[in-house]
Image (cartoon, rainbow, N blue to C red; front, top):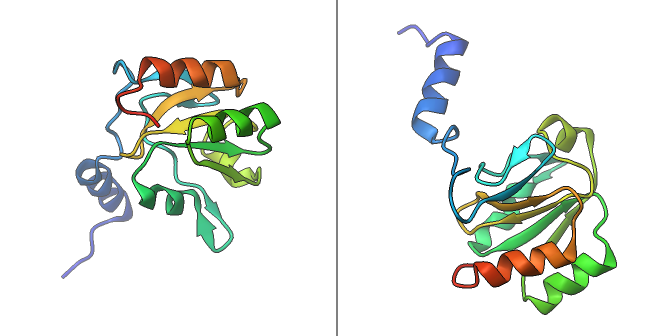
Length: 136
């Protein structure tokens, strides 16, 4: 049998894999950082022999920073009992539309709940307070 042409395989994958699903209008979606809007599925970033999706196996709310997390964000995540994953900034993250040093609060389903280009600890606390049934 003939294999599907490459473009057909990509179209089929996007159609059945739900990679085009987004929840930007959801009440749990707030903000945009880089090309990533809250409500989008977290972009997959390969980093050497690992990737950012490994952290998603926990199926819990978690914060991602691609670059350097401020001490205020680290303290807020600790206070809110929200795991913080700090990934080294890379061209791979940039290519996926992720903003350097921005905060991405990831829902248990792998979608972005809060995308904050400023990585503001007060905004993180306010978001979690308003959505306390799901986060933390």
